[in-house]
Image (cartoon, rainbow, N blue to C red):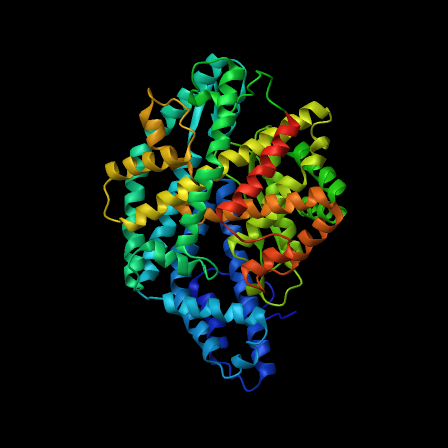
Length: 564
């Protein structure tokens, strides 16, 4: 393994790492062997920088109120990253211009790698460096605003994540009270978030224009390396979801209204069990969540549980929700040490089990890719990364008996999981269609944006949830979606991957051993093949047609009916 980075090296200031870039830029390359070593050393540098950034981000999100952690993260995005960007561009050019590159391009993995570098070169503009640093700072501001949101409940200050558990309680008055408190708290920051987003849209549009694009949407398709599908494919996905998923969602919510014996669904009625059963409580705390998760994954495949056990031994998980912790959950690959880190906000509900196995899927993917030669080969596009995580949610369901020993409770959990999929796919389509509109119309006003969100929501929702007395709650519901603020256009990948995951699970129901082998096999590929070939290795199709989505939704609906 290449060890270009000196032992005990650390970054205190940009100059510390600029020297390493310059060493690579000045190095002569006289042969293919030299070129191979050069690429290994570039990979070593990239891995080091990635992991340094990872720990700054992890530390900051684990404690958003710690100024030292915040300052370390901001130093990287405001001072270090901007100064390194020109060096990275020169390094990319050196690789692309190397006469020995052509001897590597017959290898599909290197072809994909070089293609990504060429795209980065085409997109690079010096004038965008400060804009991107400012956008990173604004994204951190969003995270801090969300992390600071709490409500008072029974003389206790609780996070919004913990408060959301109250929406599963059987007492309807209690749920209504909790929802209203959460809504009132969110509305306190709604204008602040609207103004923040205005700044983001303006800066993102300028980044796109500087790079020669008509709008930020088209810029991001290039930036995200979407070589294997187009904006029209996204719109085809939107249409297929509208045709084949929304009707199933509407049927399930109509059934909910009947079972609850109510006239209409209120916003506080969508998460509670429709038969008024107590919320599922599959674990007691983060330790219990993890231990049961390890047992569940061991039942599915011992290798999966070994990955989580290793992470537990190395303290590479932060699972419990607490004050001052950023919202959400993620798996962050630690590129230098070839280990992942799992972050989440567990509060004791079934959604937390889903989140753990989802992030475990990402983590296992990281372990599977560890032997790959270059860091670039491990930088999978999100459509591939999310296939690993979303498949694990479905593959692990039978093993959730380690959380819920009673078969009736387990079936109930499976129903909730599948209903969640039927609710999530329309939400993904809503968020993605909304973002297309935002950046196709960058000069829109806040009122126009609000109106467009309602249009998109109406298109992809059941229309059965009554927000008539709380219009702002509906108008600003997109504020909760961190991707819109922090990682624009990174969201439809979840939809594509969800379809693939359903396909993997369908295969698992037909032949468990074969499906698991294909699942593990595709993860080993990293990003060494085009997306559609990686999906084929997993035994599924990368397709968004009406007919294919109907086939998958029919399967999901039939499985859901069996669990009821």
